[in-house]
Image (cartoon, rainbow, N blue to C red; front, side, top):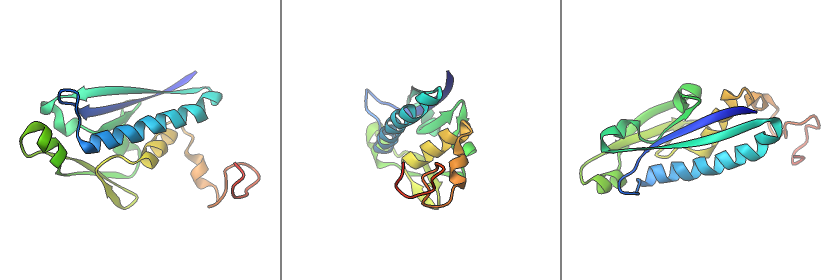
Length: 146
């Protein structure tokens, strides 16, 4: 069976994480389940590894790696940072955390669509993006088929 390993790195302080990391974690958990349902019948397993970081590793927080490659190296994603009220509350000092710009929008969490696109691209299964808009991706080319 072919395997895709997705590693998510995030700050954790006494069992708590910031709001944006929490939201990324929720998106990631759902996408890994969705990907496994779709890909296991094709002989592909998606494994999620969660790496907890401490306050000395904040620049690495909310990073997702696909087989060791950062999502921003796979997709057209720009990484920036802004003030994170949630991390600042957790750590008791001003903290600036990662943001990502994906498809022209800035996000404080990593959106599910970006996670799915990166996974499929790493696996070489992103060809469906070339299908006509509205197509389900199968040979019938009708809307709502699949």
